[in-house]
Length: 306
Image (cartoon, rainbow, N blue to C red):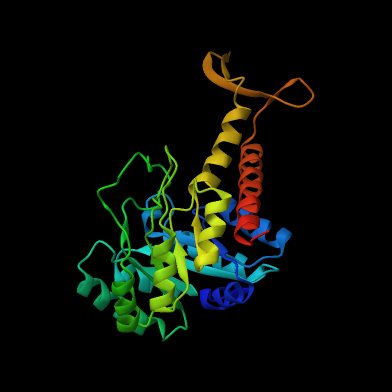
């Protein structure tokens, strides 16, 4: 069923847990995420990041996200993640997205607040939930970075007093809080400052969103949730799980063949029977989807505090 992010945040607040928010830049990832949520019977958020526009346009994937959310057996919010321009965020709202994030975190405070105020005003027309960000986690959510390589000069932790002022000025529903996580792949263990989450909650009285969730331990996830995180963005390791599973199926590689004077590559995999078989594209899709689903389920169980 299609719901707003605020609906899901209310559920999580009552239960003292968090909901997973997963980037879904293709049909397979949407099916994996919703399928995992249905099996665990937990609410979930599927999201499209503006950074993914080059690999999957909003106009193409948005209607698919909305339709599969409506058909789902669990509450599903459809969220625009890291919208970098008001125009792009508004396109998502007009399309029917039930939640949006305007990300002006790299802008001066007053400009970020002014743009966010405009987004909140526009969202009132459709009833969409609005998330924004104070502090900066550096790289955007493409999932192909090399995060966690040391101190990131672009990363700025959220100031609780500034967060309080920002929430009061804008009227947002959720705040993305920078407290030590980074987008992309971690090459070293992240060092999280949970006091930032705790103090932002105390001063701003608003649900906290955790971006850059990949690579964080179960214990750190659940500590952050106890401190007030109610939404966790997750994509990189889910996408990697799908990619690695598919790659492993190609461990036998490809061989050149010639037919009617033309050269081709014949790719094959060692199947369970121990015999070689040709690889079909629908097989690749199923391998990747199942691997992403399994990875999502593990993350959802952590976020649900199980």
